[in-house]
Image (tube, rainbow, N blue to C red):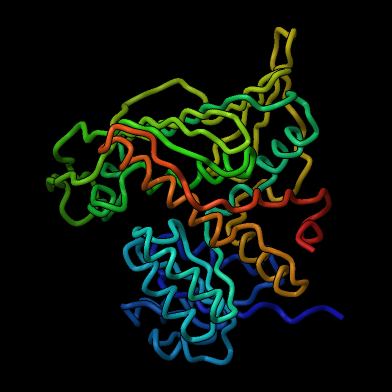
Length: 368
């Protein structure tokens, strides 16, 4: 007998919501039963657009018996508050990244969820896509031997030229580390396991930014958070990674992610995507080889983390895009800024297990 779909209540119907509201087309284990937003008219419009039965005020949605999981797509500053309210209402919750902008709030959320017997999941789920799971299998199969090091670069010049509301990107709790760092850090932890300690240097290279889109192009945005962060991550298993995230670079020609092993190098795809390419260059070879993708979901498959949570609730296993993983990533991100401020290594206390790799298979059977 096919299990009933997991019933999702979506909170926040902004720019990211359409891809999630489309997720049941890819993942039949999910169904959207209600949406909510501070702007209830906007919520009603989204509900009509995607055929969602109801648009509700937040309090009504949290009390709704036809909702199993709250999908929290609010702005990062509201992630912890909304998620905690969902937990207190007895709902499972899945946050957009980051888990919270405040580390203690993230810890409180997970502790309270444990007490209430509900689960917390969190984006990004791109590490479950076909590209990064292919890379994970290659690494686990020993294709490059024992991992010894990694590099990761997220270099750009910020979103103010195109984003309609870019101000929050330059406030505490944002910047390139909190905005894009979760993709890179989650991919690295998926490949190498948890981080043990962090050192870093960080700065804000420009005192202000100029908005190029939205209602007031040319408006000056004060910068109140570091926008170039160069970090060194020591992993518990031994590898050392260099991670640079920046909104201060006009152009660059560097790899997104590479893992260096005792017998070769593995080149990973952009961790903000689900597909390839995945390439390897083994010791002694004079050329890179493209690896065929071994796993499904190489297209934009946001929602796979929710679908994995649905499968985990049915079987009782751990879900992969977990709150514990997201809390670890959050602690590492905070540590990159603290390490720069204090001029020393910062130890990381959260030690989540490395997420289980997805098995090979077709579509949702890999989530069983």
